Every structure is written in C-alpha cells, then in structure tokens.
Length: 98
Image (cartoon, rainbow, N blue to C red):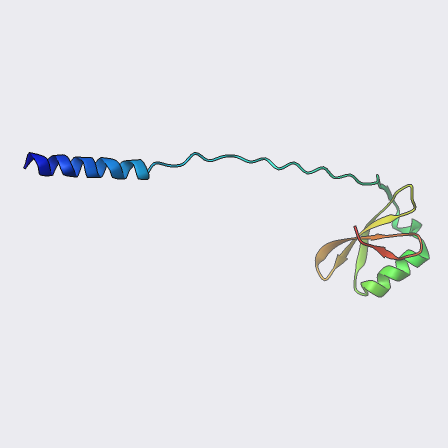
C-alpha cells in the first residue's frame, strides 16, 4: 500500500512540472517614420490639376484637409464612401505611392 501511495505521489508531482507556466517575453517593436515635412494649406490653395486628378480617381470624395511639402508634393485627406483616405500627389496631379 505504501508503494502505491508513493507511486501516485511521484506521478502527480511529475505532472505539476509540466503544467508550469512558461515565462512570457515582451517584445517591443520600434518603427521610425522618415517623411518630408508637410505643412497644412487651405483646400482652395490646391492646384486645379490636383483637384481634377482627385475628382477623376475618387468621383464621390470630398477633400477634408490638404498639406504641401517643399518638393511641391501634396498630402490630401479625403472622405470617400464613409472612409478616411490619404492620397499623395505631385503638382501635376499624378497620384504617388507612399
């Protein structure tokens, strides 16, 4: 009987070591965004070519904010089909991929 009780105790003790919680490592991810500095401008200051290009690409969109950098590139925030979308263009109205 002693051997049975001792065997059960050793068996249950060995199960506890497998049930131990493994330590959790916290990983920190750092992103650095390097971008040209855009300054906000009035929507009326956008060139007509940029506005026409936006109307062609997003016919139902409304322009909410406009920004411009030193390279005459434009960052334009629009609302299209209920979603906020950011579009980058150059002075000729060509849509840039950023």
